[in-house]
Length: 236
Image (cartoon, rainbow, N blue to C red):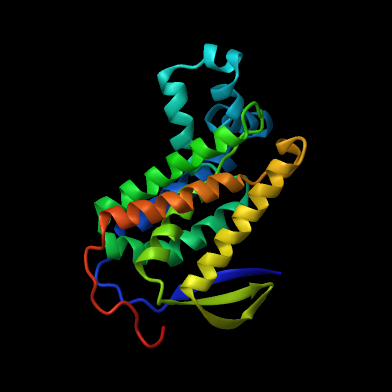
């Protein structure tokens, strides 16, 4: 069973244009992925996914171009491996992105989002040096949104459900929900490093999540909030 966030109780005064645009962009790219066949999908993932060996091996660096270094890191944030992958990521972005965008403003939200995805990817590359397993998905950038939410509205309460018990909901403090989420990512990433071959420990880029979350926290603290009015409401 998997806990899933559904909503929060934070009062927002602005519409979440950037969060919505990112969600729509991700679904548009995923729709394009669905139109591809067999080897075309694999080619897309290996071309625009993050493959650590390209950045950390002699052969990979010899073939690297400036565009080849930067483009996959950002392009990979819009590519997903399946319906569960994209729906889970976009649900987290919807629940937490709206409040973070409202607290920091549209432009700073975009900087925070992509900076978290970029630095999270760099940590993933560093700790998986030599791996030929491509990493895709927006989870590193979304982890940054969670980190910013953690420092911006720790008093908020999150409405959750347990999949597949989707008709049963409950509330927990945001500081507990996000603190537990980060702890799981860190422990899982540490376990991955302890195995002989990281690529055999699963296809989840745990350290991308850890790096993204920490980046989101630091950027959020550096930016400061656009407003500090009453952070939460009494209900949903």
